[in-house]
Amino acid sequence: MKLTLDWNCVIEAENNQPQAHSLQRLVESHRSGSVDVALLGASASENTREKRLPSTFHHFQMKIEDLGWSDLPIVPMPCVIGLTYIGRSFIVGDADLFKRDVNAIWEVIAPNVPRAPRDIASNWEESKDIGSEDLARWRNVWCDVMSAYSHIKADRDVFVTNNTRDFQSKSTPLSKLGMKRICTPDEAVNLVR
Image 1 (cartoon, rainbow, N blue to C red):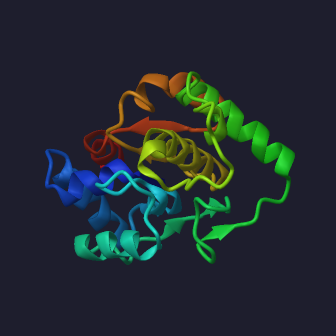
Image 2 (cartoon, rainbow, N blue to C red; image 1 turned 180 degrees about the vertical axis):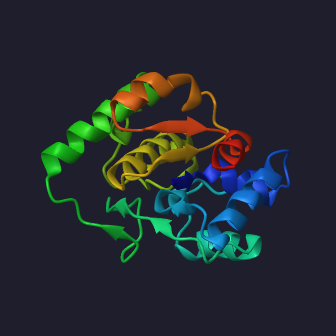
């Protein structure tokens, strides 16, 4: 069984929140070889506490190292200029299919959020910093969509998150797009027993 931990799982473990123990049990199950637990490359593009895009992949690596999870594999993500890191993402083969798949996921997760940052404000300029604080909400949605896309394209079995608003509450339409199962860390522990 292949489990994917999203960024919320990293935060849960980092802050020693209620389901941190379950996450550690999942990591231990990975290390014992009973399940395959991986992190998302899309997590490296998640907003910092300052609501900015991290300038390098190193920010993500340090968090993972601090948790003692650097041995977990990374689910690759598609390369998107300005939002991903060179050498840490893959080039999409069929751009039209990629756009259709991403739009379908976006429509489920955040139908009221524009797909492109230029659609957020009438005064958008192409030179605007995509990593800026005022685009933090848009980037958060983008990361959720890329996380789902990456998980589906990697043909993984269980998406583990405590983001009930964007994932669990929309599990039925997301399952039609290829997300086989979505559960919390506590549910995932029970699933792999």
